[in-house]
Image 1 (spheres, rainbow, N blue to C red):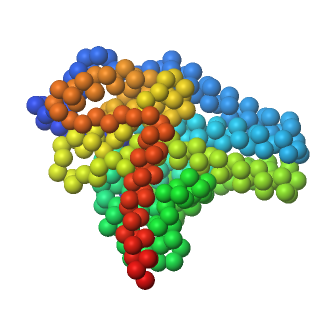
Image 2 (cartoon, rainbow, N blue to C red):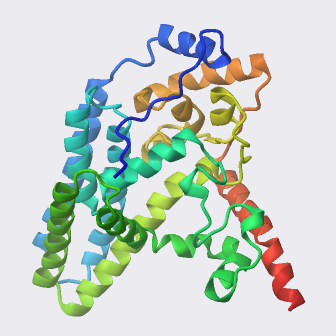
Image 3 (cartoon, rainbow, N blue to C red):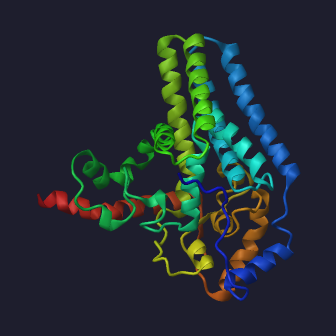
Length: 345
């Protein structure tokens, strides 16, 4: 049974490059809590969630509910982004309230095991883009390392050969994948609070399906479920895809600062980008300081960028569209061995 409950950077020596940067960030007051921001953000997301389901019951049996499905897909993704901040203890300083709120947002709110995701995400933060240690780049449906592409057969081989073109269509299945992985984690003991998490996931599933079956006709219920879950997956996947995909894969010998900076990519944008991506567009700053409150990431960005230039560390920042283009190009290049192997048969 293994669950990690904190997401903190690895220890560094007093004279390390990261220690110097950390002192500058701390002296600028950017690690301080932002309670007013999170009261506002949690209130908005809660109102979106309650308002979306209120509209669902008020509208009743109607094909206009497909618009409600779109709105709730956006809302579910925002709830998941809040759960992300809770896991990093950006909202509450202590473990207990963070865990309780995380279980409500993750398990009850969107139907995803908070404990499973937290364990997976912690391992990602500890070794981003590492071929063997980062679960986010492990070869599953998609392959992110060239050496994993060869030798695939059947449906997996077809997907690998065409994975760049299939990337966004496959995101429509992400919400289902999260639920399946959650159930597997509960069954194999990865999750610490199995009873509580199972009960909340069951309550979410029963309430969600009951609402659809009671309010909508059978065809409307199927259409709502497919559209809602597909768009939820696409939106959630699009918030994480620009962050590391197509960036270098480390050897494991890098120090903390370089391991986090060189594997991450920032996305330029204004307040709308910040809100849509939940602050994950400042991926470099977030990986260096995972406990930093989201609104402080924008203020930390010029400090981190200037310091990276000072010590000669490459700092990647691009537009949102360019970030997707780079990720898709990487997927296409990784699939080259599979295409060559298939052509030779």
